[in-house]
Length: 275
Image (cartoon, rainbow, N blue to C red; front, side, top):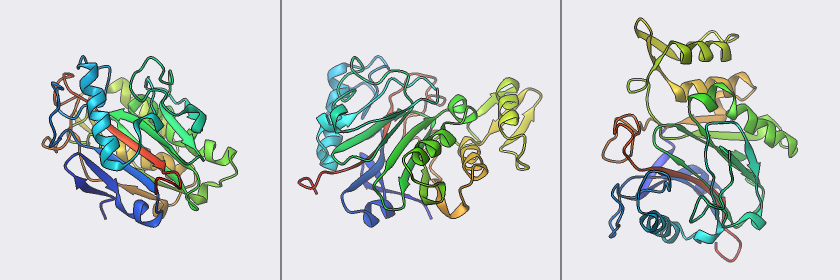
């Protein structure tokens, strides 16, 4: 069953997580908004795409109001396709929320056990990964492009949970909207790295199109990596939304040839007074 449900034209929620854990907010934005926005792209959350800074802040304020999570409670990062995951607390609130100047540098994942902080990352084809402990007290979010995927950011997040005393059989994962295998064509060097990552796994996540060109299922690759590090099928759910195919809903770096906005993944617990 599809984990993401469109709540407003601006965003999806991971419906069963939000229902199971009252006070949790977890979802993914679209490129659309019903309100006035000065952005050249629509509902853009990326400060690094040559959009007007005020327009990006306006998009963030719009989402903040829709999900009832104050913007100065958010954290954000300058994502660099690496595997560094930052554990954050309420003391970090506001960093990267309205500028990259004070955002976390070289960071592609967040983890927290605190309420009152919203973990956010930006996307336009890469895979958003959402993590939650069985009791809901710990949440994480990661940005998995092909580099982050083959270098193991999904497995790294599981290790972060384990360092907090949460065993991997007590972690659930949702794999979010991202480019599908039909739209994602890569070359031989990328596939070599994929093969190295999955050298002990029988299933392939790519198909040959012609010599030197392959279609790569990045979502399935992340799922296989998670299965390979000990999670069960029941612990992992995966969307069917493609950021490139579903052009009416999402930005796509590939489809739009690099001139496009960014969606945002988000997860966090509201404080008791917010709920």
